[in-house]
Length: 96
Image (cartoon, helix red, strand yellow):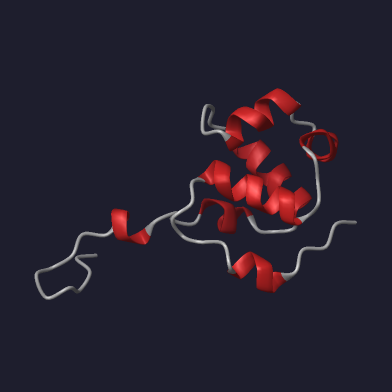
């Protein structure tokens, strides 16, 4: 079983891409692409392309990645950059 220190997970920035987030979690868990591939059933090539933002992935793979990396699928998919995704009023408050 791979255990990830929750303090380390919280240090991941909101400005990273989905692929960067996968790579960071994989490395924090001390896993190689080959090991993550074995745990998830996703080919090494596909994982590598995900990490390099050259390929998107299916929902079923997101679930497998979350399980293997011991985080929730929601965590993997949460907004990666709130500043980009949120329009602001002139006073600085969100327009949501």
